[in-house]
Length: 144
Image (cartoon, rainbow, N blue to C red):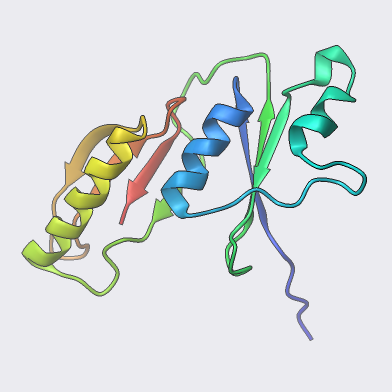
């Protein structure tokens, strides 16, 4: 029998809270409850050694369906294309102009949050259209 495991998606980044808050807004995610004994994550963060304060941020799907997202500060910047990326599924089941309209509307919303539009990959004989974007630190993702 196969065991189903939960998945966490981890982002290496320079500013975990900034990147994490972008993805909270983009996906409708929320912050998990702070550790027991703390009213807020800020209160918890202040108890960490100075070099560790602000070094991590996490958010969760409020429905419990999607994976937890974890953001950790790393010293090096992003150099090359991601080997793994998120597809934000806003056009599922839509085709043609209806799909493009849904993608463009979401693209506009995410650009206002700090994302950058890279390019439209138009529909072909095998795939529907999608938009390649970057989050606030340049991590690629697709609106699909």
